[in-house]
Image 1 (cartoon, rainbow, N blue to C red):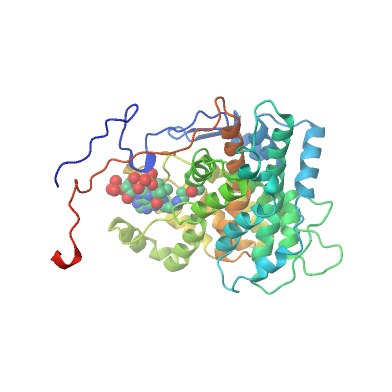
Image 2 (tube, rainbow, N blue to C red; image 1 turned 45 degrees about the horizontal axis):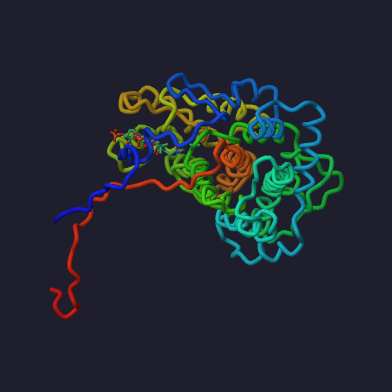
Length: 412
Ligand code: ACO
């Protein structure tokens, strides 16, 4: 293809690493994964211990600031996050501008960017080019305020995206409930006096939130950092992360699992489905992971949580099919030789379905808690030694060499 340009001015070694299989872009203190051993730790704490003893907001504090909060710190953090839950009343107009059948992830993604338009204090272009100035407690406090606001408003905006499609009035966040309880209240409340969400379902959703809060540099967290590296405001960076999460290979997988189970129908159809997967005509959604090669530790906790939920809601009719699929795939050489095991999304969709959520809302239930992880990584990047360096990967150019422009009348 002719002579290719040389890349003489490049600094350092350039490797082609499609899909970033072997590229580390950060030094991070937040989340540790051992994909071979099936280990996940937030700031050193095993996920199993956190799921058993902690709650989503306490874990959010841990992910963001590096240590478990004291009682007073936890209470203050919760108070501030919930305080930020209230939306501006003119935002109702924004949510009402979507079609009744708009996908709620499209609404939520747009809503994060929309939210940023309210806060000039978070816009680095208006704040001397950076949101964080080293050694300035005011700028650190300003940055943390945006974090609290995004976590607080994530549930409110998700609930607005949910209710607008049902033509229902929006619900102001209540007082006296937990983060997850407040979310369920805003989703469900229909004007009943003394309404409180079912505590077992509230706890189950909180565990799911905690399990989804972070997962190292997955596609959406990387997108937040990539976008944030231009020093854009955190609302825009989170909107970009939310868009990345929307895809079926990432946060859309929980929705895809249920669609797959519905298409399989009865357990006796599982073998035929697996044969179609092997012929590469279908994807076994909820299986496989870029990092976990033996098991995803979150999937065991989700499976246990599902049983708690089914005690309240009754068993999901797709459970038998899911169990048959799980069992058959785990015994099949095609899947075992590729080291494919269920990931967190294989069972979570069944819980959301049993709780009555519409299918297309499932990725939203992933995005809301993941706001915490996105912001923990973003905060760490903003505060890192030496400041932020814009993320600008290179490519291996394989196109044409130099060519002479051909006038249109001479082209063949
Ligand atoms: N069904 C069937 N085959 C699969 C699956 C699957 N779910 N996942 C991987 N494979 C196969 C691949 O075809 C490949 O086979 P080959 O070597 O014969 O070509 C082999 O296993 C290795 O897989 P890769 O695609 O190289 O794995 P990668 O790390 O690139 O992808 C991913 C990981 C995207 C998660 C993939 O396993 C997948 O598509 N899973 C289904 C979607 C899903 O559940 N996503 C949720 C991920 S977890 C999360 O975001 C919370």
